[in-house]
Structure formats: structure tokens, C-alpha cells
Amino acid sequence: MTDIAQVWDVLHAAATSRSPFNFLQLATIGLDGSPQLRTIVLRGCDRDKATVSFVTDMRSPKVAEILRDPRVSLVGFDGEKSVQLRLSGIASVVADDVARKSMWDRLRHRTLVLFDAPFAPGTPIDGEGNPLAPMPDDDGSAGPYEKFALVSVTVERLDWLDLSSELHQRYTFSGHAGAWRRTRILP
Ligand SMILES: Cc1cc2nc3c(=O)[nH]c(=O)nc-3n(C[C@H](O)[C@H](O)[C@H](O)COP(=O)(O)O)c2cc1C
Image: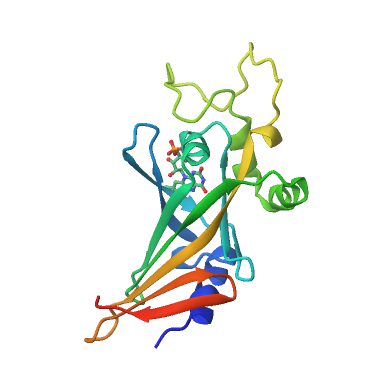
């Protein structure tokens, strides 16, 4: 039997180490209403606030999508334990500078340089050069820190599917921090 504390333990481990749920697939609603899916690194988890967080480029399409419609889903699969974890909730771009700075200071150099790219992710590139190199005409008006976005997702529903034994187990947890309702459902 799985309880909500165990699920948050798994998320906490994922946000602080290279465990299978460290990489999650994030679904947003595209600007044209189509589903949009991509991999992100889980960077933070706060069980008291029922939030998970990731970082991205402020200019990336996913940020525009979240600002237009903040409903998101995340899914991961732990192949060793045969567990799928799905989350859904409401995303927001964090404005609080203390939280932003604290995350920024934890990021490695190889992540920080991504925010220094002169153009938005998804911009077509001509030629074979290093697209992350500053362009001569880059006016430098926004530095990498301004281009960095910390996105927090307030989780409203978790769905835990455990296929490790013959009797598959599936539980959903809905509600909010401190008041989760667990329901066992058919897998
Ligand atoms: C293993 C892996 C981890 C990734 N982690 C992130 C991440 O944490 N944040 C991010 O913005 N993109 C990450 N990406 C790239 C995204 O999957 C995606 O290609 C990029 O962010 C553009 O997405 P968008 O056009 O939907 O905004 C990762 C890709 C892979 C393969």
C-alpha cells in the first residue's frame, strides 16, 4: 500500500538526486490548444506547499503556454521499480527573487550558460557554429539571470501506478497540501 508521504519521499529524492523521476515529461497546452510535451529536470519539491519546480528559459514556448493556460501534467516512469507517477496541477513562473536566486545559485555552469543564448529556444540556426556564443549584435539588454525562469507547479492530483507485482496497484491522491484524499482505483 502506498501513502502520500511515500510519494512525496520519492519526489524529494528525485529533486535532490539522479533517481528515475529526476527526469519528468511535462505536458502543457499549446498556444493553439494542441498538447505539448517535453522532458524537464525536477529541481525542487516542497511537500508542505505541495509544489514541484523546474527551471527553464523565460523565452521558451512552454513559458508562454503556461502564462496563457497554467494547467500542466507531469509523468515519469521508474523502470527498475515498475512505477509510473503522474502529477497534475497549476504552474506559475516564480517572481520571488529570493527563491529565484536560491535556485540560480544551485545550478551548474553548464546549465547557466544555456540562459546566455542570444535567441529564444526554438530559433532556427544557420550554419554549424556555436549557437550559444553571444552574437555581435546582441545588445545585452537582458542578462542570463533575467532569461532564467523558475517554474513552480502546485500539485492537485497525483497518480501512482505500481506494476511490480502480479496484482497491479494504482492510487490517486487529490486535494492540497496537508489534506490529501487517497483513492485506490483500477489500474
Ligand atoms: C534529459 C533532458 C532534460 C531536460 N531538462 C530540461 C529542463 O529542465 N528545462 C528545460 O527548459 N528544458 C529541458 N530539456 C529540453 C526540453 O525537453 C525541450 O526540448 C526544451 O526545453 C524546449 O521546450 P519547449 O519548446 O516546449 O519550451 C531537457 C531535455 C532532456 C532530453
